[in-house]
Image (cartoon, rainbow, N blue to C red):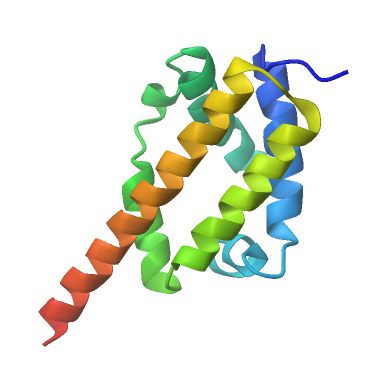
Length: 136
């Protein structure tokens, strides 16, 4: 029986399953494996803090001193991040949430993921436009 997201353990489970899918995905997998060369042992605690802060209000992510927009802007310099990448990321995220969770926090996680995907796309698109102008 599905339940709502209630704990860090739930978030860790969600992130483990999401990244297993995303990293092997035909559309976006290469971004994680070849471009970012993502080390899950290092990344999962960080991304767990991020989502725990958003969903459960834990405030763990701030201690990391990281800016997700800047991190994705740097990644965008290595390989262009496009709308279809963010769309696929979101599709995988939603599917992973829906498989195990139902409730207010699960819906909030999906809503936040959509807002994050849109904000990231707008940010990296703006960064790309600035780089093109500067190259002229």
